[in-house]
Length: 109
Image (cartoon, rainbow, N blue to C red; front, side, top):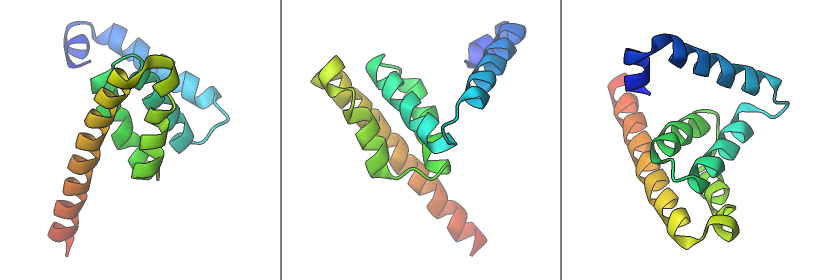
């Protein structure tokens, strides 16, 4: 996305506007939307998307177990290789998110 934002900012903004419209249309809460998106990225090997949406899901109140469950739901459809890749990426992101919270908490305290 960084390159698109730099090289084609109008296209990037149109994409963001579309994503915002879709989320606004959804009657699901933010956490559920993010968990579904994690499952979709897992099925499509979207490792960067997994990073972004795991962070957003956790910020919206999702637990580690809910993130894992969202990824595991893709298992019968996409198979073990893609699910393991997604789990590896998600666990890395969860660990980094936890580290950021600890650093922020230590700085505040």
